[in-house]
Image 1 (cartoon, rainbow, N blue to C red):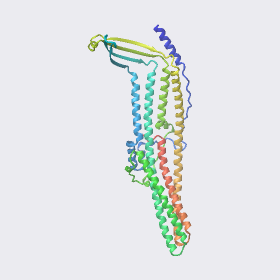
Image 2 (cartoon, helix red, strand yellow; image 1 turned 180 degrees about the vertical axis):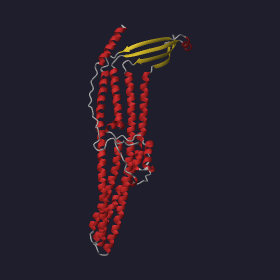
Image 3 (cartoon, helix red, strand yellow; image 1 turned 135 degrees about the vertical axis):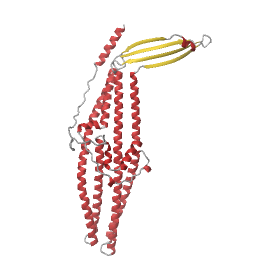
Image 4 (cartoon, one colour; image 1 turned 45 degrees about the vertical axis):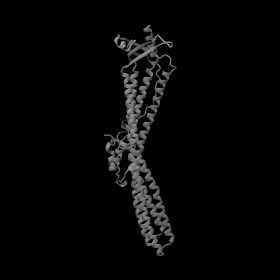
Length: 450
């Protein structure tokens, strides 16, 4: 009879094995070279942030590692993954349980009372014949790796965001400085206009125009101050500190433009932690599919136990113990299609992860190409804008001198003044975009490595 049961179980298990659904995925061909960078260069190193030549920025990066709330939450998530891995690892060991019991029996009408004590120790162990438990452990290990890579991705994102916010704050402070300088220049021009009005050389309307220009420039300072306050608050939040604790003393001019190079395009897959995270999730999904499929197979279990009974507590420990040893084979036959549906669900999740990974690959290489092309464009724009600023400075100097001499009107001077302000503001914007562009490239290539 036992042979018949075992034969039926094995037959059903092999039938379940034949139900494997073929899995199809679209292959992605990794680009052989970058379109906007030379090949076989070097990737950024861990000390890449030092290229900005800002000790203050390095200090803020260290502070973020200790205080950032997202990083702290990610550390707790990694700890959860450690425990999940330990839980799955327990499946390699037998389970042992012990119990003590006592019962008291009596009639409601009185008399006939009795009591019984019992002690039991039992152990069971599932033989992983088909590798289901092993697949579950592999899935847990892959999820643990995925969590580790996720932590690296979050750390890279926080580091890049700290750099971006810091540069943004310094740029706003520099905009305030330029606006204040332009305001002082407008005040000097106003004194010249007043002198010419008193001498009767020009109409009082010139003084009114320059006063209006002065007030416009003074009004422009207010939104800049609000932007600075907001930038300080956002940076402090990112650092995990109160805004009152944030002290920024360096200036935008002190920042150096870093050199960010990229290596072989095929190495990008090994550098970006978000891609490695998705690869680990794919491995976990594959293991889940195997575990779900093998749940359809028979389960083999070994059991052993010992028991003792006694009418009194002392008698319980004096008698001889009874032991039992057994083995069982369990084959799922009817569970309303739950096991098969779970198998198909795990396959569908695997397909989803494959498509997500393919999309992540496309996005990753596109992000690098965009960052590289933008840096080239910004460098060329910056050089042109430098010439524009020099010309605007000379134009303003000439316009002011001609106005003093009465050779030109105030409108020409106002136009030259506004042109210089716009040129300096545009140059600052390009300088900030260049620095931000290097941070973006650093992030999309996976950060720095030793």
